[in-house]
Image 1 (spheres, rainbow, N blue to C red):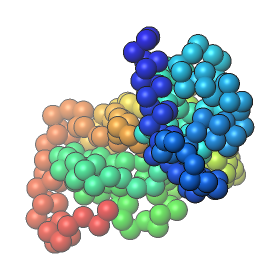
Image 2 (cartoon, helix red, strand yellow; image 1 turned 30 degrees about the horizontal axis):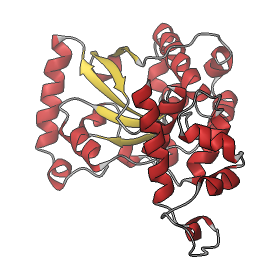
Image 3 (spheres, rainbow, N blue to C red; image 1 turned 180 degrees about the vertical axis):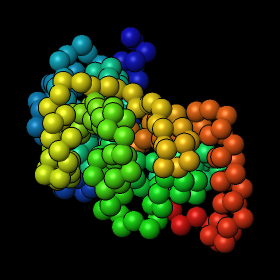
Image 4 (tube, rainbow, N blue to C red; image 1 turned 180 degrees about the horizontal axis):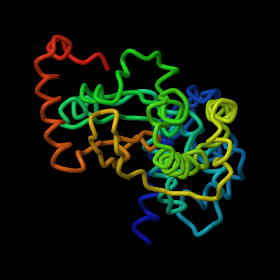
Length: 283
């Protein structure tokens, strides 16, 4: 505990020292003995007392609300990683999700996605698909869809009627995806894009209207999907959160049985020899 208090103190002092008064809209009198901002400056800009901020910087055992911490983060111009670090040191938990959704993947994640030998996508917590590899064409061609049509919930529940051919499987799939989407929705505060999607699904999808208010929740996105319209293949999917991108999820589809694995291998060989593959992915 003492080590963490020192870490908190050193971290906040370092954040203060790197900022000049001019960067935060304060006059620079030139009379400061040390570089950067003073504790009094942070307290005034963050809307807290100097005593309270001093205790925080000293690592004292005080009550700190999330709202106050957010103001300190904004005052000190913290990066997303620094914000996460401050919440971990002070409240020993992850920082609350921000309303803004990440809409792009890092170059390293894009390369990994392209090199993956099974279908894989990256989607936001709103279930908007923002990156994919060539093998996802087994299901659908995301690059042929406009960005606003690349929402996986909309595809599964409304757009792609092939999932509705088997009513029992369609019901099970809808229950599974909505139980996970409820969790994603609860973790993203006051985002109009979520409300717009929910309103559209409620207007266009009878099964969404019937199931949305169910209390079922699931914090893991995994399961087995059977696709008779794709020649009877079955995939087991699981998802992973890329480090540093808490609102993104990498979803990987693995062949569930030997027959499906053989078909995937054949599709992979076919894709490797196609002109589009040779030109490179258009993700």
